[in-house]
Image (cartoon, rainbow, N blue to C red):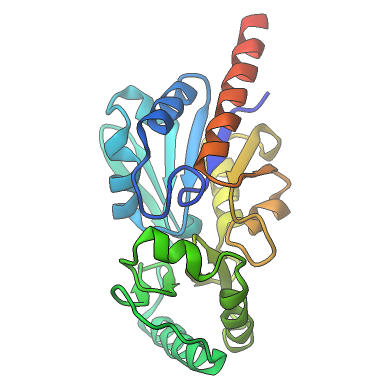
Length: 253
């Protein structure tokens, strides 16, 4: 029996940087009544507040929800309010190295970006995130820019050589996430295991970037069951199936 259902956010529970729609919010709320839930994504804490927490009921069910921003480099849980358990933040020197390497990789890639919507680099404390079209790019532009991940794969290849002591993974629709070496979504899964006292075999992970170099891919090495979803609509159907399975198990106990 699965006790913990873990989700990526952008491209899995919601469109990039968009809030949960009404159906998704209702499904997540129903799921929280039968299992514990975690959301682990490249976005920082404020993004979770806007996209997820503002859309679900603020009640005792929140104690069954774990939030892991910046690919699991941070962890928030709810008691009477949301509180951080840890944050694997970069030092000033590490941030400078990453920023300089990113600028060099972008130039070396030869990719022409054209119009940008906001800054391409964002310091999220425990993660530096590159967004190809800028942090505020509209979804329709982002969806067209790198649908097969090939542009970001080119930049990632350069960064892998420059940043050997860090983890470099692609996520979302236009982003590349850089964290400390060994601290990625797999790290987040192990933290969930240790903090919640739930075994890996009792977890399921759903994500849209379970591809080589994708920021969901590290979860596979934990041994957790993984389901690759195409988009939030497919995620909804999977959640419905999980709820039905859990309801069947509970009715037989």
